[in-house]
Amino acid sequence: MVYLVGTIGFFSGFVLGIFILNALLSDRSRRELLEDRGLKWTYGLFAWIIAGITSYAAVQSYYIYF
Image (cartoon, rainbow, N blue to C red):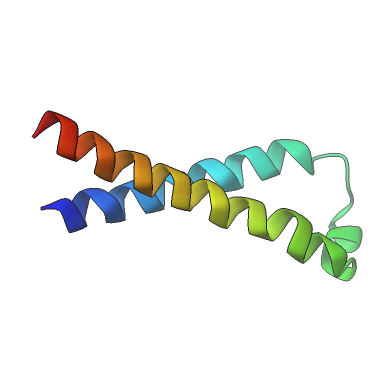
C-alpha cells in the first residue's frame, strides 16, 4: 500500500511541478522554450524535485496516519 501512496504522490507532485512551470514560463515564446537548452536543466530539474518532495511527503503522511 505504501508503494501506491508513493506513486500517487510522485505523479501528483509532477503535475504540480508542471503547473508551476507553466505559470513561471508563460511569458516565453514557444520557439524560445524549444531552442534554449539551458532551460532543460534549470526548470526541468525543478519538476523532478517537486515530484520527489511530494512523494516523500505522501509516504511520510502514510506512516503517520496509518
